[in-house]
Length: 92
Image (cartoon, rainbow, N blue to C red):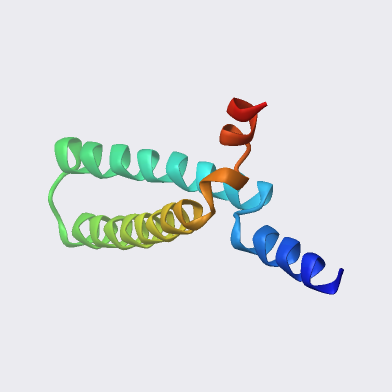
């Protein structure tokens, strides 16, 4: 019985939670908005040191969010396919 509980707990901990999926979604929204801001700043802003600094800060934020998204993607792929509900539905 103890081994079954440990197995179930390990499986639950290996999969992203609903909150993590929500955070990943929000990170992707932020990534899209930062890309939009960078594009428009480069296109319409007057070149100056301040705008270059703004661009660098936006690129840093973008890189951090993209790294976070890659970690989430890797973690969600590590979850066993038979435990994500899709294959269980196909069997049933």
